Image (cartoon, rainbow, N blue to C red; front, side, top):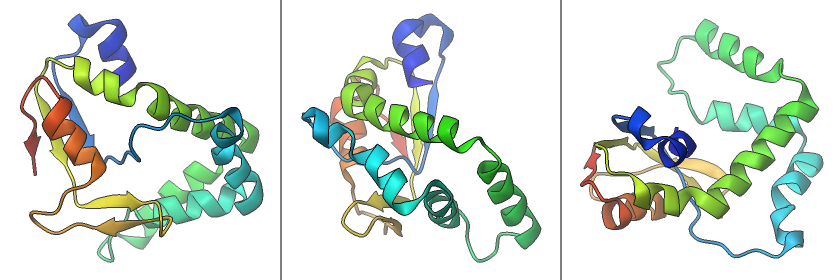
Length: 148
């Protein structure tokens, strides 16, 4: 959606971010840029998917729904999905802040967790807490975001 807003802003009337995360502006050497791909190889795609998806559900989530969504994610061709993961991560590093700065449409950010890079996990945030991602939205977006 953000790339669409950059390329064809007339086609975007608003943006909703659900539990977004961003590690901050990073100018990386090529070796560092490969880190996301190296993590995939080291930890394994299926383990990373299980961990990322496990963090997306609450204890009240229906087990059948949880299993169905996880199985659907795991059904992706691993090489294809790993490429998407790496590309998305690099797009964030290279373009996310500029894309947010270019938004002139209403923004809604619904945030209950954030990706803690030190813990390699999503962790809950409390009312009044902030994250690098929320700070970008508050300080860089042209339109005042509504943060829930």
